[in-house]
Length: 588
Image (tube, rainbow, N blue to C red; front, side):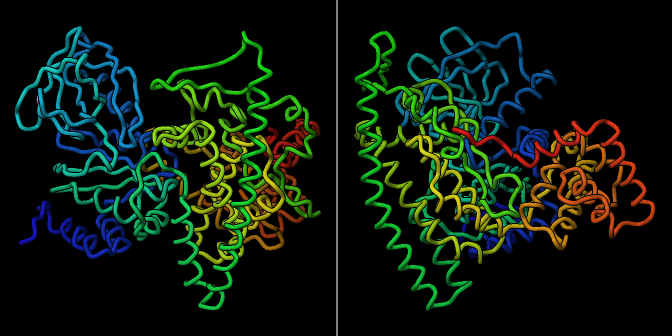
């Protein structure tokens, strides 16, 4: 007899589809039941998830960052409602080893009523298991008392066992083996491998009576959940070479057939061989530069730190000659084709330019964000496996050289993939490029830029305005209305004939400005007019061309808009347009 947790027939149907590996159908079934909500903005989405919290509810997040953000939001709500005894709150130093064996530490304020999660097994004193949760019943200077789900109450000496954290939200990994009446899932498809078939199945099957999913993109979730990929930990946000190969095979099979599959496969193999040789040269070059810089450091400025008994000596970030390179050598920019004067296809995560060859930070303990944090965690995993710092850097560079080469050689294949697959792979490609820049201090080569641009240019332009969405506050209905308005504008912009993708991106960039939020809000149901405003405001088209498909009333409104810009001064118009034309700064 098969054990079934689910009591609700509709939920059982979803689980049966998931068991059969039919995850697209599972997501569609939940959507039909009204159990799937799409909120693109991460903060607004998590606010909605936090509202769903209750004692009988399990909140799940794919990433650790998502889990931490949700725990913070939920706890803030509980404090406001008086569900926690603020007078009993104490700050405790907590520490544990994560699933990769990397030591973590933090400080958390705990009070009576807080839900906590145990992060390591401990059978000798407390008989608690990794992932088990409980509620704090008392606090003291040396520890806390916790009531477990089985009714036992244990007094935890934090000097002996401190592997605890807030337990309002858990990662999918930590939730395995648990069952709750209700499960709320925060599914962030930017990290698609954390929403693959295996992880989506675990999330859905934790619920007895009800499950609800909040995601940033319905279609992306369907795509990600249909992929049966190898097991991945939450830390690994890099696309591994094996997964890249899997995606390559899938795209080739769907789009090109046997002959093209064989040709593309030969290209990838050749790229891997070329990348391996290039990686060896590059590693030697980088390691040589690092050693030379270490020797020339002043004693007073010499930085060393110890982590787990290992001494780390790191060179200064980028050498002075790198900082003095010309913009032409260090800027990532679009192709020099005459009609491509719009913004660059991508900008670096802020943490990248802040930590280019900053080995002190990458091997240190201070908090890092974004790509820098991802890279440091990858380096820590290499160190935990027994490698030296040089070996850890070499291993990362070797893999990144191979994966970026695979993207370069397979760009013409990737553009034939479904749209969401292209978006997922483009984001992974960008992350790989960013980490190579951080390790080498060198701007991406022309072939890498061209490959990225090829994939980017094959995608429809997306229109988003965070200032407009923020106007909705906590109103789900109003927010959904603004999102639908933006989608209508997006569809109209992508249907515009005579515009290349770079010009469309210029328009989208202009419509993302705070000043554009007012225009979009005032003209609900008029996507033609909003696109025309973007065309004029961004300088992509003059008013005569932009107004061609407008009604007489819209034409007059557009002329008033253009006159207002000119009345406020040519300088202001030029400044706005230049901000869009230049795009974000990509100097290293």
